[in-house]
Image (cartoon, rainbow, N blue to C red; front, side, top):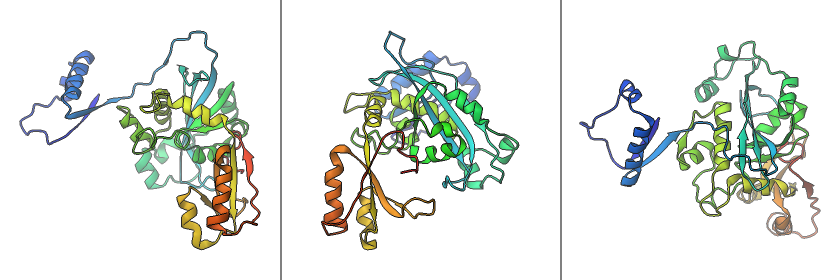
Length: 321
């Protein structure tokens, strides 16, 4: 299936292909048509994503197992909302960011024990009837994860906290975030949303359904980025290997909250047992400058006690920092 964005209206008398006619047009013919449209400079072609079983042929390079995960939920609060769909797609990767085999996926519905909000159904297409009586076996999850060395999500700060409530197996594994840890803006992308990245890479998929989002995420990680010339996965792995410092701006003056927000700090109100404070995670090289920023711009005193905590991919995005 091919979707085209054209720089102008389609003439009223332009011939249109119906479903039956499309069935009689071979894939080769469609690709020739797409190539001609792209060559004109007036069209951008989006191809439907067809999940791959392999990205590179095994060549003896040592690999590890990654698992791309995604959840659909009844809402945004991991303390009170529930998972209604979970998907996991395992893939083998090398240390330099090449993806090899993609394995059979895990996809399950889960009855949240309450009606699914209408807004969630409108976004995902998941209805109460689809999840009624469905459950996810924790033992099955743990067996499926098996030899996983890394869990990846596109917004791990959301997915990890839900999944740790579901299974302790996700507590003990390192996590990486394909949304936050790849510098998409530096690579020339206008948005880091999964659908926007897919379109920028020339494909589309059935978004907001967990297993389709996982396959789209793996496809995006496999691509070579336009400015660095590295795969997105290579950059993600480099980031995941680096420790971070978790900094809390406890009792920061209220009138300086906008400065903290612009700097990337997130607010925690303490309702989940964590410290009530603004916080941010920074790399080793940015620690001293971040502390200097807090002392000079936020607290405006240099004797304030700030106690940064060193964290790794095992704690990152967990809500336990």
